[in-house]
Length: 299
Ligand SMILES: *Cc1c(COP(=O)(O)O)cnc(C)c1O
Image 1 (tube, rainbow, N blue to C red):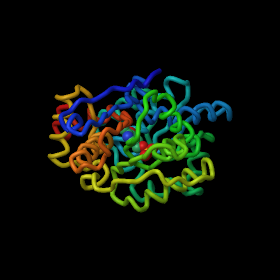
Image 2: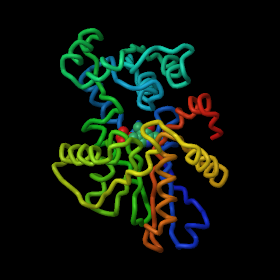
Image 3: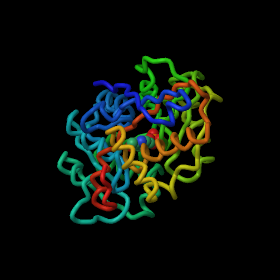
Image 4: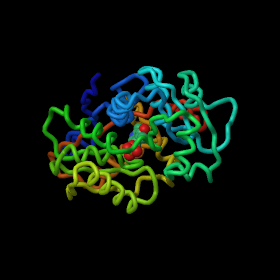
């Protein structure tokens, strides 16, 4: 399994003599996509070690994490349970359809109930209901996920100055920062509003992982396009143009926003001239089937 580096070419890059490389984590695994594979890897080992036969996790109806856990369950022989936020809608959207064809059992809970997803009483009740499953938090972010994400940077075999990564719960970014141990500049692009909160979350995740704090990273909080899973026409137009220029598919929740942000920063002259940027393509392309359905997305 490999995530190759791919260089992108664009007049803006040429003008400033900047190199931009994509780390194609989306190509890591056919169904357990990108950073979700990194986040699951050590958790799957741990679940086996604990002799668990069931994985249980949480997500929205279009969640890449839900899709990845369903696929991992099928591939590695776990029963999988998805606790899904909101009501059931039939026919199932492409994400949940795929999850169920991979054997995932879905339990829908109201938004109020879903909010208890980290509370011990609720988790105890679920553990009892499903015979003591291995429980993965929403988005898959825990200490073992951070450990797995430190490996994203392990096989980047070029010199570079900046590492860019999209961020939801912050687990992936925490892993990348911890993996770099203070080297390079790390730029995070949150797909949700509320960057200040995420800053603290990431600091905490890193502290839990290795007890350290780092100063070589920052979040760019202006590229959320209205919030999680929200899009604007200019984002879709950017993704379309990006596809035509590079033949690399992005998705609108994470990687589209990050890439938009990187090109916007390039336009503003943020990056030092002659520098090298590596941007992580964290995958998530399974979600595009749903976006094609809802938004007429072309990518
Ligand atoms: C889940 C996901 C992210 C966010 O990862 P976090 O660890 O939650 O920050 C980024 N990109 C893609 C494609 C994802 O599916």
